[in-house]
Image (cartoon, rainbow over all chains, first blue to last red):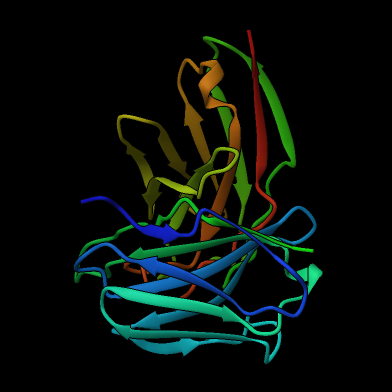
Length: 116
Length: 112
């Protein structure tokens, strides 16, 4: 398996523009998570899905942020409009909660977003 | 989710054994203890997970005392490539019951 795949790896955009980050989880994983990492705040959980359904979006900072998971193999995180304070590395992770087994999360390589 | 406390930073030398201790006084009965490693410009990577006593894999060992209020990640004979941030997390059951909450982690620096 190629692991969790995120695109793009880097994104530089101007303030006010729409930004869409993409994630392909590991096949067979039923949980998908979006995290944001900055020096000041560390790793923050933004939202997570179970079987394509959003379970907890309490970490989404504002209405400017939205996330979707239209099917088991694809998710997007959208920021509209973007602001300089959104600059961070955004990680996607997936996991499988198998009965009687204990699995960790597999993270993607992240998208480094810079809003100027 | 149980809160964790771990040292902000540690340093050691190549070839030494490194032990990073994490406190989690409010751990619940069903909680597991999981450690992740993160290199610069990469996402965190799962290292090891345990519930009680000792767990060992090809990368590390995890020691958990009977009261489970703390745990120790042990890295045998570290090398320069073990320089990374190590996160201790508590509360994941089955890998996906709750979104993981990462703290600041421990910045481990290995010197030659």
